Length: 233
Ligand SMILES: Cc1cc2nc3c(=O)[nH]c(=O)nc-3n(C[C@H](O)[C@H](O)[C@H](O)COP(=O)(O)O)c2cc1C
Image 1 (tube, rainbow, N blue to C red):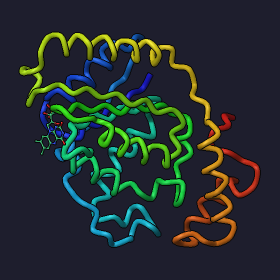
Image 2 (cartoon, helix red, strand yellow):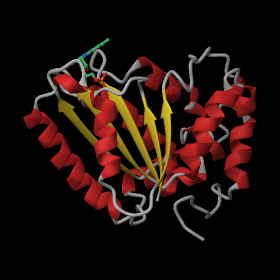
Image 3 (cartoon, helix red, strand yellow):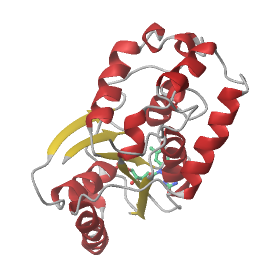
């Protein structure tokens, strides 16, 4: 299985370790590509909207494209982030901003409808839901049909400070998830994804898109007719 991991932090702390624990417990031959943010994408969206017409016109296209290509090539996407102010880290949020044209409202990538994703986060004491939901919302709108979220409050500033009992629980929980993922079964697009896709197709048909380029994208894939990205050839 091809796995692309995106860490919303440069350091190998608790969120990174949670991601490693998950990956290390996924059986089979796995090809892993890893990115660290901001090391591998050190920019914020400028709001210039140049990407609406052409992704390559984004000032940060080159760095961004390496990550998008690796995500497109993967069967499984894994995101890790510390919970910062009950939200994903700023560099992770920046990646989501810089990929907003991949939302179903714009020019979704067909490959996303065939992937699974896992969103992981650690916090000191609060819920991790704000961080994991913040990321999984983008993934849903990219079209990813199966998204797992898992978080743990570790009461620590780094992995060394995490108590053995908490580490054991994280190991067990990620192990259970890894067992499911090891089966490598193809995900099915659920009713929510299909419904959202139909709404966005209707929007494109009604010429309500941000640019004619978007409608051309939908037309070229046959999505304004009967073709659907989750249907395998
Ligand atoms: C800028 C910043 C904001 C934080 N915000 C929260 C928070 O909202 N809730 C919480 O429980 N912990 C918060 N923490 C603590 C971290 O989420 C926690 O230590 C986490 O396990 C760090 O993960 P890491 O080791 O992967 O960096 C914050 C830490 C920092 C540095």
